[in-house]
Each structure stands twice: as structure tokens, then as C-alpha cells.
Image 1 (tube, rainbow, N blue to C red):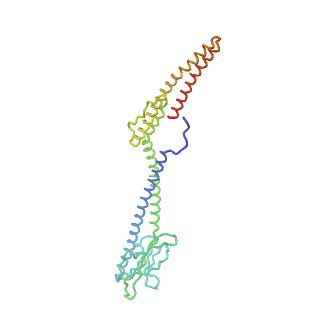
Image 2 (image 1 turned 180 degrees about the vertical axis):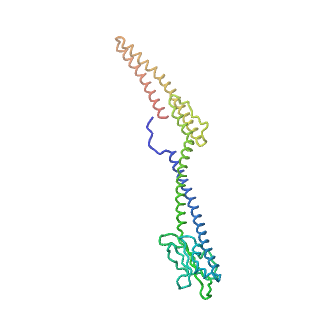
Image 3 (image 1 turned 90 degrees about the vertical axis):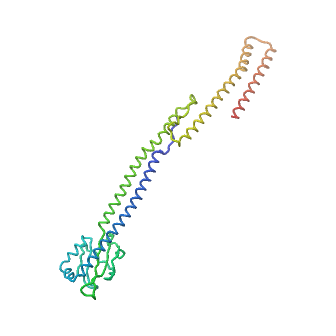
Length: 311
């Protein structure tokens, strides 16, 4: 058998394509879930900030609240919770009465909502701090003990924890998509090898067919329907080859039989002539007879060439 020409392995190519498809699908699903999670976390954080400002508004409506603000500023620090929180209570144009800013974040310049304006999520402003970390802020006014001077409430929070959590989630998405692609590739290799088993069996049967057993046929039992047409076409080709080879063998036998008689005549006459000295007339008659036999051979050769060209 001749050496197999270089080429790609169908099994590996299908497995690689299946792995890429699975990776793309898993990555797309991961991106969708990531966006949904990011949106839900954003809404949750915005709502939490809005509720805290609303709570402070309600507290400031109490007559003793201003004294509480001056006496226990840590209470408001606990309401916002951690080092990423910001809270400023001040009268417009004056120094803050309360400034809770453990992270030393710059105070955003926001126009506060009027005291009678309801707080909505659309009022929350989204920006970035100097380090590129998302930052949300909300400014609102609350009535104070001086009706002419509403108290400004500025609350904010850096989303460092959320950013870190989302970054970890992105890494897990990539790892999950990669692991899923590897598992898909291994599964695809096994499935494709199993699926190509009938094709390998047909190749084994084909390799066993030669000139000595042209009557053999491929056994398509158990082969998938996609290979049934190939099996039928190959068996039909073997049938044509077998019939052609049979006819060729018969023609060859007939030609050999037809050639044997004139050749035997030529050999016999020549051997008799060489057996002893003959007369000139005998040799002339022998040559004339040989000439007729040679003409007969020439006509048979022409007929053989004609049949070969017609085939």
C-alpha cells in the first residue's frame, strides 16, 4: 500500500470545533449572567444608599436630632457601615456638622434634592474615584430646626467590594468555560471515535478486497443510514469491475484459443520444412501458406485493437 498523504484528523478537528462551540456558548451564558448579576448588585447598592439617606431624613425631623448629631456622630457612621462609606451633614455654604469619611474620599459636588422631593433611584449618581473604582452618591435636603436653612445630606459609597467580587466572578466564568470546553473536547473525541467505528469497519472490509476476490461485497449491516448510499455505490462498482474482469478473462481465453491454431500451423510447417532438404517449389508453397497464416494473425490483432479501443 502507498504511504498515506498528510492531512488533518477528522476526529480531532470535530472535537476542536465542538470544544470551541461549547466555550463560546458557555462564555456567552457567563457574560449574560455576569451582566444580570452586575445590574442586580447595582440596583441593590443604589436602593441601600437611598434607604439610608431616607432614614437620616426621617431622623432629622425629630427636634432632638440635631443635638444627637452633635453628640453622637458615630451613630451615623454605623448606619453606613464600613470604610467605603461617606456621609456629610451640613448647612449650605458652611463647614460640615458631621463628616464620616474613613476612606478620605473627596466629597462629590451634587445639587441636593429639595426636602419635599421624594427620593428615587434615578437620583443616585454613578462616578469613579481616583483609583477607577465605581462610586455612587446621593445628595438630598432635610428640614432642620431652622426652616430657612435646610440641612444637606450627602451620602456615598465606593464599590470596591462589589468590584472585587465581580472580578472574581469573571475569573470563575472564564475558568468554568475553559473547563467545560476541555470536557466537551474529550467527550467529543469519544463520541466521534464511536461514531466513526462503522466507517473504520468498512475501510477494513475494503482493504481485504483484491483481484482474487472481486466477488466479495461490503457488509453494510449495522452501518448508519448516512453510509448506506456509500456501501451500495461501492458494491455496485465492485459488481461492474467483477463483470468486466470476467468478460476480459473470457475474451482473453477466446483470443488465446484463436491464436493457438495459426501459431501451431506455422510452427508445424516450419519444423517439417527444417526436418530435411526440400525443393524450391516446396519452400515457395510453405512461404505462401505462412503468409496466409500471418495475414490471419494480423486481422485478429487488428480486431483485438479495435475491441480494446472500443472498450
